[in-house]
Amino acid sequence: MRGNLKGALFALMSMGIYSTHDVIIKLLGETYPALQILFFSALFSFPPIAILLLRDPTHGTLRPRSPFWVALRSACIVNSGICGFYAFSVLPLAQIYSILFASPLIITVLSVPILGEKVGLSRWAAVAVGLLGVLVVLRPGYVQLSLGHAAGLLAAFSSAMAAISVRKLGRSERTVILILWPIIGNFVLTGLSLGLAYRPMAGGDLALTGLIAVLGLSAGFLLILAYQTGEAANVAPMQYSQMLWAIGYGWLFFDERPGLLTLGGAALIIGSGLFILMREGSGASRLRPVTEARLRGETVTAPRASLLRRLLNQQ
Image 1 (cartoon, rainbow, N blue to C red):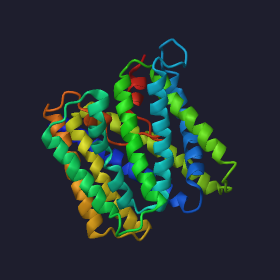
Image 2 (cartoon, one colour):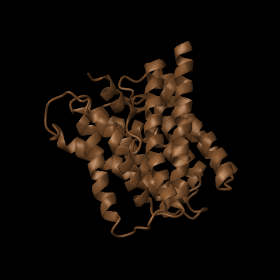
Image 3 (cartoon, one colour):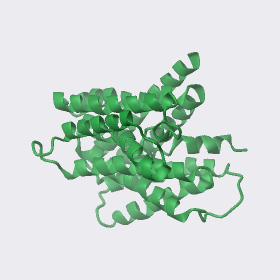
Image 4 (cartoon, rainbow, N blue to C red):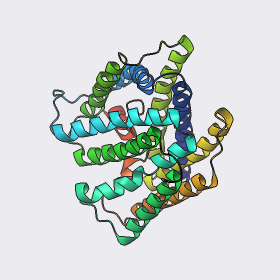
């Protein structure tokens, strides 16, 4: 019990730092293109990640054993970062978190054809309730949907597909390949975008992109401690504490007041996600794709905690 409590506290700290990471993205997004912010944030993330990659003692090349799944996962991580950064820059925090919280529901759906997961009627019902919550948040037909909403949905789907892909790969690929290829893809795409839309950055703003990198890695290491200390089924639900951070930060910095429908839709999404996690934690799911995904979407500025842990444990 004590370990689970410590794990939950580490996870809460991690999610608070992740939320601060996202707030800085939103603040910078009011002035600079999202792709530019992502490029410099990823650039500042690379030196510490490179140090960790040097710990990989496994001999081999950077050629993946499963090119399709590595390429798909890399593309999904890059797309998740691009879409997520853009969505944070244009949507209210509570709204974008509500959309991103749909990722575990998408993982549950995708786990059936891709992982061969058996999903019972109760979990299908939870998925349906969660997707209804997404519709309540978006309210198509009553609220004018924007490119930011589409980007948020694409980020949620890409995060889910990246989580499914890494589960499909298992440990068949070297850790360095799983971390490095998305970084390379991100540098190429976001680097090319600088020639299309670039705005010179003040020194303080450039430092904030470095802070995004520091916060993303710090939160990842705290999440490692959380899963080392507590059980996954007790730690993973702490993801949803980000809604509280979203409401607080939105009120403090952006004068955002989420409406009752947004909060109601978020409650449906969170409730369905928690139900799926409890079902997986009880052993009702053999493969446990949602719990294993660790919920927080992976981007190049916030790498998958399990991969960082694998590097740290290598001698």
